[in-house]
Amino acid sequence: MTLVLVLQGPNLNLLGTREPEIYGRETLAEIHAGILRHATELQLEVAFFQSNHEGALIDRLHARDFDIAIVNAGGLTHTSVALRDALVGIGRPFIEVHLSDPASREPFRQVNLLSDVALASFVGQGPRGYHHALERIAAEWGVDRG
Image (tube, rainbow, N blue to C red; front, top):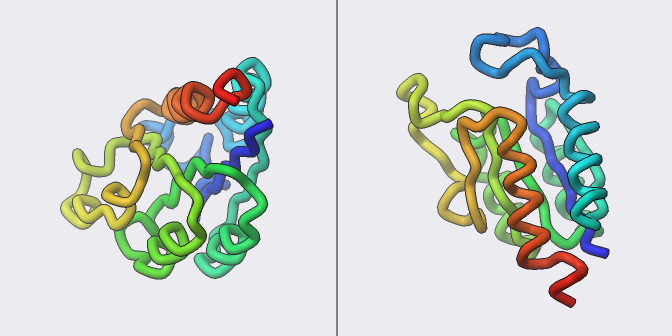
C-alpha cells in the first residue's frame, strides 16, 4: 500500500482560530480526520507530521519512510531553501498544498521556493486541496496501478 506523508509546516497547528477568514474554521485535527477518511477510501495509507520548526520538518523528511508526500510548508514556502533542498534531496515526489492562494496575497508570498520542484500544486481550495492531492496520488501510485 502506498504510504503518504502529510507534512504540515509552521502555524498550521493554529488552524480553526488563526485568521479564519483566510484559512477557514476547521482545525488541523479535523482536516487530518478528513484526509484519513478519504485516503482509506482510496486505499492509501497516511502518516501525519506537523512542526513549527524547520529542522524537525527536514529531519522527518530525511527518514524516507514514505512513498510520496503532501506538503503544506506554510510560511516556509517563501523562505526555506533548506526545506526545498531536503525535498529534492530525499528522492521522493511531493505534492504542494496551500489552503489559501499565496499568489493572491501579500507581495512577499509571491515567492514560492517549492512549486517548481513539486509534482503538482493545489492552492486556494481549502482542505479540498489535500483531497485532490490524494486523488492524484491514488491515480498514479494507488493499489490498482500495481
